[in-house]
Length: 359
Image (cartoon, rainbow, N blue to C red; front, side, top):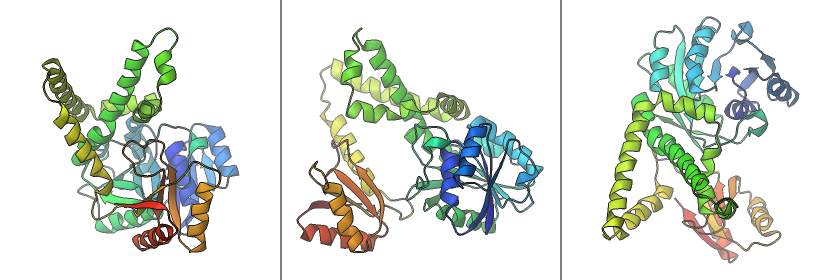
């Protein structure tokens, strides 16, 4: 059994603690945070075994230590932990940039393996953390030239205890990928909010009417500004390149409108590529998912969950699809396995449900 250390008991750190606290492979969880109330609450919840308000010998018996702080502090904490943890301890992080961190810690005398759970979150604080946060989500692992295969395998097995899907990507590729799929979109979302704010009238009519699609694409603009300031500084080069590429796309589209050129292909190509996302696999991994069309009435969802439960089918995730623009159905269900998904499809289809296999 493993002893786990967690530095930073916020949304991600708290979710790690809650998830690991349910694992039979985890013995003890020790947490550090500057917010004593979060630490006391986690201890009261029996999510952690003990806590400390400084980086101390409390961590000297840990097999893994997760650093879940803003990215600019991660290297500093790694170097503090290096002097405390045992030699076979694996230190990791949850930061969304990797190259600078790995460069800063390359000379340490303990193993560091970069980690990045691909969890979109605009919340912060332990009180918002969830024990099922990582289920069926991709968890990127970035190793370096000193990472042993045995340590890598050990770390992957631990990540799978979160029910996450580990994906190994080198640090340069990681930072480039996240700049395009996460960092630049965050800048765009925040920019759209500024556009609405600057364009609205004194009665805030636009703000009142901003619902549906606008709220969906700007949701991430509600994230922690300190975290995002750190990310933009740490991944500056890739973010700037991504913004320049985006500006070129917007400029070309602007010119097409000004010159009354055809814009059909612009929307057609983006639609076709976006529609292909749902079936895209990484290393053969995708989710066993069903989308179901149901009426908005009392008991509609519980009826489906009861049917699946009676047939011993385990629902891993369930979501009401508020944005119906590019989705079939109103309810998204992820099953445990593809076999269970196919069984659920047959059962619900025979009962007359309008249902579709996704992925």
